Length: 198
Image 1 (tube, rainbow, N blue to C red):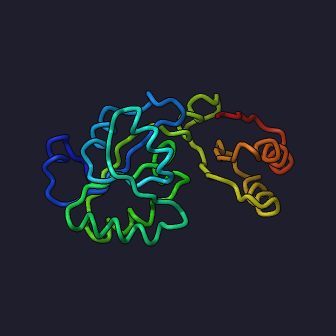
Image 2: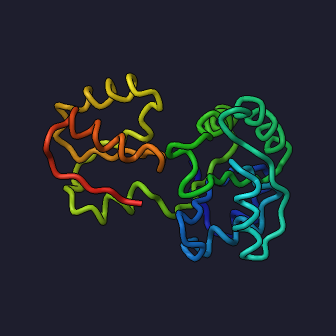
């Protein structure tokens, strides 16, 4: 990973991958540095171009968008790395929060690091940390599980494996499965303090 000052970011003659944190619900929750990077890069790789376009339009940013999601990650990673080897500066964003946190991108980062292409995380909003900090649960140690499996049997087995976990457990769930997930978590994990955040 690289740590750069703003002048160095603009003057770097080689390509670079910027991992840019985006708002998790309120478009004002974005850093000044993130906005500057989004204005300066050559291209923005994103999960859903329509979603990212709304953010860019809100801040009057006009940059080419390229889709980068779990179904095209391998192909796109190679294409984007090749562009960065030719000097392109590319931002990777997710629909909400920090890229790579329960979102695609690790293949691209690994490929960049393997090919000595600088990777610069641009910190921003995180549903993980926002939820943890407002939960009232212990924060000294925690386990981030990400999304549970969509299939009921696999999801129940995943929850059963967490039964002995004493740290605060953080997981993501799709809105339409929250009620089912809560019921299954109560059954698998027993009666323990919990917090639902959105």
